[in-house]
Length: 223
Image (tube, rainbow, N blue to C red):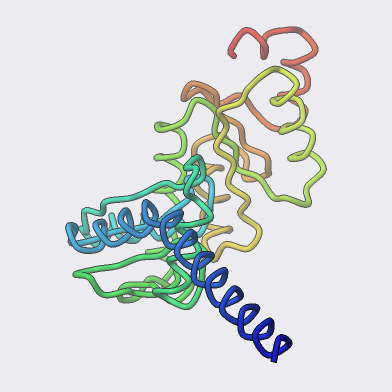
């Protein structure tokens, strides 16, 4: 009899603790849920994004080209980032970014979000120009890079050593627009090699140029 009572108490305690954990999780995620729900409800186009993510940049460029004015929530510096992504997974089946809604309807991931003939070379060129131009104009430091390239790694290392903390880096090796981006970089800078580095909207050069500027102290003066 006593044993049965103990087992009953344990089950009730377990149910209470489980319910309490669920309540805490809901309360902890309330801000994230409210942000996402309100964003979807109150805006024609709503995007959950991370500003450095190449897929997010691509989605925003496609939306702009399509004439869609989007409300964008950049979450990488938000204390609710993980909660927001967890809630997005509940809504959409994935926590990756970007997450795009139009007229309260979830669209899909960027890799399938192409709006018309976005795979054409003309559209690739247009998107490449948009990505590069906005990257240069909207950021103190903008870098076109490939993650495996030793010269790109060197440039980013010297920028970090110089004290730059506000850098926008686009790793282009997996992007459909890679060749178009490099072709447009050639138009702007005279070369399509990576890295391509701009500081304060001024082209600095490639990896060797960044290293040279660091060694002579001119790079540090731009921080």
